[in-house]
Length: 458
Image (cartoon, rainbow, N blue to C red; front, side, top):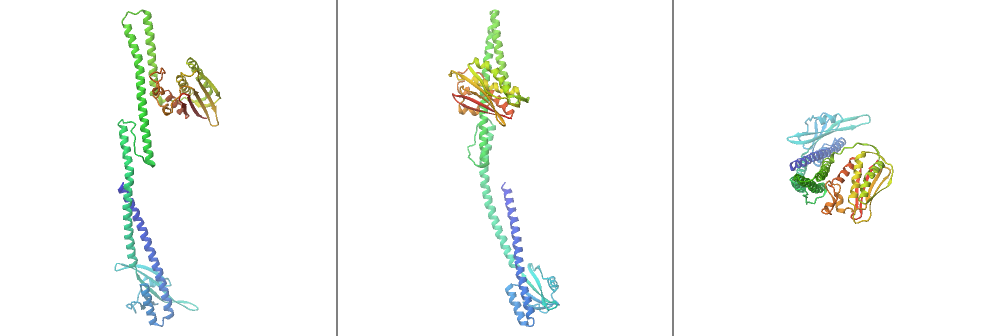
């Protein structure tokens, strides 16, 4: 990771250095070229006005040469040197591209390498103006070394190199710090994943981080807690089923042993066989619950357009005798016709589960226990509410009631309660509701009762 970051940083600063140094050199050369063109034009104008005074012209050429830190040659129209600020080229012919271009009335410049050093040469024409024509009398050639610019560019590159090295060092330090700040919580998270995968469910990462890493740790802790909760519910469910299976098996074994003595009358045989049959039915019911639990996620729907009011009426008729037998009054209020796409039998099964729970968990200390069913249609949805005044559910248990294997009575009065059940009823209800893309919510106050609201999208 550090190598990748280093390559990225070095590449970025290298590109930046190339662009900056190239732009710097171009600007400096352009500025130098403009300055020398101005000098060459001044020299050309001065020469044209004072060409008869050779002493003044030579003095002027040397003075401008020193000021411009350059060598100045003045040539006639035959390319012969008339004035040289260094005096060594006087009388010699100089023929190059810049001079030829100037004598053709086109100022020109060029960069050459002499003895390993760059030299800027430029030339401008010396033009004499008359009433009828413009005549080219010669050219001014200026040669200037670019050594100062090359040295400045070298210094700039060295500075950029130092800045890049410093920036790389600082960036690597911050990268190491950032990598450590990320690696530490990730290492803790990896260790936590290994613990959970080895069976240590409920393990939580104690690191408190911010940002996306913090959210990841928070999600992991939540997942680990839910896995532990599911495992506890599973164990409780298995223990409950094991205990329930053991009872009828023990009863059947005792009855068979009694019959095997052979001293019983025919009436006793029939009575015992009926008892054995009842216990066998009970075991069959337990097996059915187990199968329902195993296939909970495999519920498939037979979707048709149905009237929810009719489904509620069917559930009401089925639950009413059972409710009255247990001293619970069931009332249907505010039912309106609501047509929607659903699986009639599955929805009825969910309603019967909810109603059965309301009857099952009635409050034995209240004189009157009742259940109210209502269905209200709004613009884009309908709300089906089942409300009772039973025992209610403690707030800390509300978040778990839809988990398979969880029974409120397990945490309250399981040892003394005769209430039957295996903790998958509400899990089945939730699964059926969610398969329809509906929503279910529970609201309850311990000692006051519970309310289940099913929100149905229309």
